[in-house]
Length: 248
Ligand code: PGA
Image (tube, rainbow, N blue to C red; front, side, top):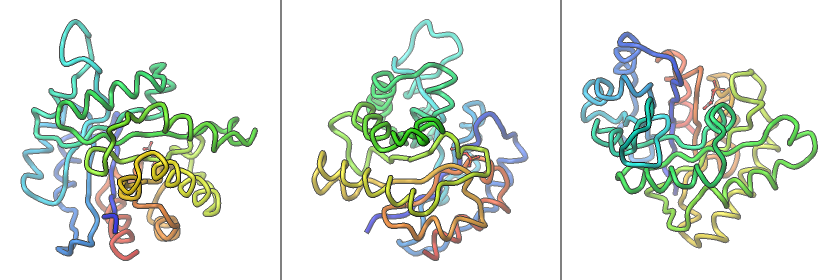
């Protein structure tokens, strides 16, 4: 059985008050309870690790550079993120792919950089509205998965998040059948490529997940949890999503 994951992506939001809010999150003690990951802005990583300490909440970064260090003004390396005590890093989010011209090869290099620093990569893939309309979703995300994920991916070092770009921050979500279609296809691809390990890699859905739609989305086969943006910015919004996952 794959352990479920509720991951929060704060994007360019959050402050010390939100970190305090984080410590009010709860989860049960069962092994079947979800893993909870929170990815605040990099400026808050140290404090987030300090505040969550040995609790069930794990911390991650939102992006990393491919290099370990050097003349890259404004960037941050995977080893710097790891040094804070964070365990995860999001790579290939559509807001990076689109806003910072990141292609599959560059994302793949970031996944490698994350692994080299001892971080688990949360690899994001997803189609645009135009690609969905032209019925290219499966081929686009199949290519993204293939090209962005290096050959030595395992269930320990990688989590894949399917996030349709048109669903992010819009309040729109794919139908449950559309989510099933994409997640089933991604599962097949992972199994074809990585064998039994491909059955164990967690597949998250992301894009306008909230308390009101979490349960039905989590009931879809091959959805192992969610990457949550807006609804992870308040414990009172994020907690019911964690609870929905625990109850699925
Ligand atoms: P959203 O963002 O939940 O606000 O749609 C999801 C994401 O971008 O990871």
